[in-house]
Image 1 (cartoon, rainbow, N blue to C red):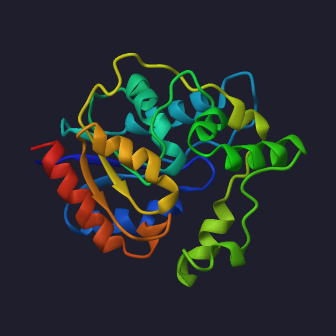
Image 2: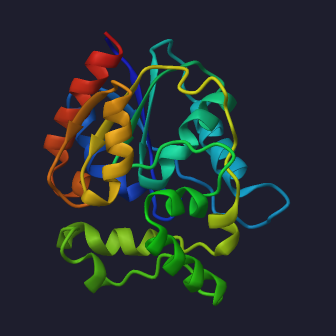
Length: 233
């Protein structure tokens, strides 16, 4: 089935994380859209709302009637049901790629505390000291992002403060409201990956780093294409 594949980047990075996979899928005549989450300039509206509305605005450009599959990497995972709620078009499926799952009513820090209390405590101390996350350097990413992509990813990094990580995410009682799939890359996302398997979702995994779509875009595109075919037969 022909679909519109919407590749959503994490709020703390940028759309270049999906660029190689987008190009690879287009070579296969699969329509892709890579929205850019808006930079947050004011706090009168919740950060998640501004991000979701930015994606929904981008979806207005879709003029065909093909199903829309939302694909979220990393911190974009919790945004997917909210994007569906704001979308001008129906969403057919969600695919989470090394991503957190929706955790309505909880903040990102609270969700992290449930799976890794020590990591959450360290991050909270870091943020409460007035620092931002991430503060990655070229050296930090050298082992998981290839040379040809690393500078572009670093240029798009969007460090966030405590307000972002303490913000409660929206609760959708009927979630998941469409079929779901999960692709695991790294050990850091073992917990949501195991939950996805326990839910009986379509599933695939790589023994890789968190940004594996930049390392093996063809293999990741193969995985996405297969899951999409299973979710939208």
